[in-house]
Length: 329
Figure 1 (cartoon, rainbow, N blue to C red):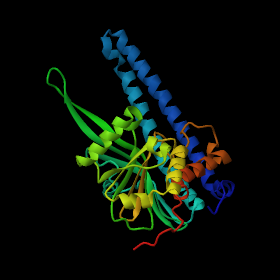
Figure 2: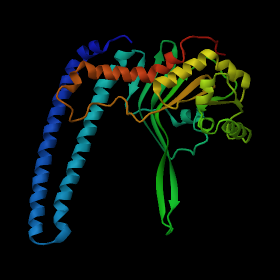
Figure 3: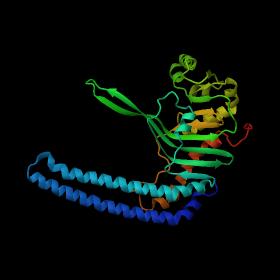
Figure 4: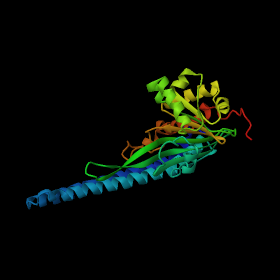
């Protein structure tokens, strides 16, 4: 990191003041539209009520509320885009000049599928993402973004009526980083839900799942009790899996899980490590359109974005990816 939050705030201050002025104007315009919509809709509804038209008398007021909602959505999206393109693109550069940020970019579906982290889930019917960050952290090539993948579930009620539901496969940060070693096999480190609930029987089910071809290779038994409690490991190459998951790497994975406080998934494929960190928090978003005046000019606000970037890029340090233990073929 070459620039501190205080320095970044100092350099960004002219842009932030301009954005704050624009935000104030947008809020003022929205307040006027809201006032006239409510007054106009309310008067028309009252007039229609005098003619005893029943529920139709509420139509103007409902239309006014729809207009208010649409105007708010439009102005909030304009504010969000302006902030991301004019502020976050610069903040990421201040954080690390070797990184590029694209608000509307995201990790490709091909790379998501290559990771095999969700290979037992249905193929996504909807694949969304944002906030792509890519570049080099010290020696490590990295790509990450927020992703939201879903599949469509079709059910029928008792009367045979078709109903569609969207089911989330994954929502959170998806990270792809260079491990500086070409793997011959596939090794998956997944959250262990079966053993935590069913104990030894759960582990037997995991082994059976691998034998039935539901997981790549075989179940790998690790020696660390805490790691075994939280994770299950499958690999097509038991020797390589143990070569990757050294006691030091296991400790780092456990520390990274504690830092994220989430059921993370990892895979080691080709020459990359893939990490999926489920989170409901939407990262790198601007303050609310109705935030207090000059919210963007507060040092704490800029420091918060730096902290979110540290969290997103923590995998490099937490997994010690910059230490070149092996030589890539």
